[in-house]
Amino acid sequence: MEVIIRQTLVTAGVSLVSFFIGKYVLSPGGFVGVGYINAMRTCQYMSSVYARHLAFGQTMAFLTLGWASIIHIFTARTRKSAFSIHPLKNKQMTFSALALFVALALMAAIPAINSHILGTGVTAAAYGMGNVGFGVISWQGWLIALALCFGPIMVAEYAKFWDNYKLRMIDKNRVDADHPATGFCTIDGENIEVCSKSKE
Image (cartoon, rainbow, N blue to C red; front, side, top):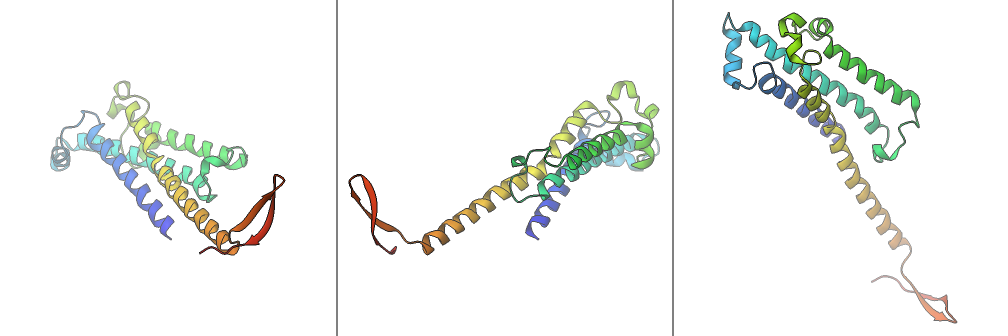
């Protein structure tokens, strides 16, 4: 339960960060202030500009959340490090994950799909595709969304490392308790057991 809660919070956190960056920092026009952008919503002549800012944030959050969920597949399949398992050990899962990665990218990149499926309502013409970059969001947005989607797996790997370390320490202490230290003497260069000494 602790793992589920932690991963849920981290995934939600990176998605919100991605939305904030997309809406208030990287959207067309650049960072002009949170209050100013939110005020556009109530202004009749600025509502279309606000819609572009909102669509930028929604698209980045969609990418980050979707990609993070796909990567989580590799985290959830083992309590060991996800990087300790060869990616082609389960080819079907790996290739399916790659296909989903590409499908989500296309949904965000193609304005017609983005507008109707994601509900942003923004078309290529409204964005001026020539100045925006690949799809609805800029290349910086793609890179940031890609970087943030790895946040949950890095947190999971860190938690797994310490959990496994604690388990190894528990096992080591149990073995030491079941098999106390043994005394040896050396005769003719060979170790010969002469007695058993319990640990103090």
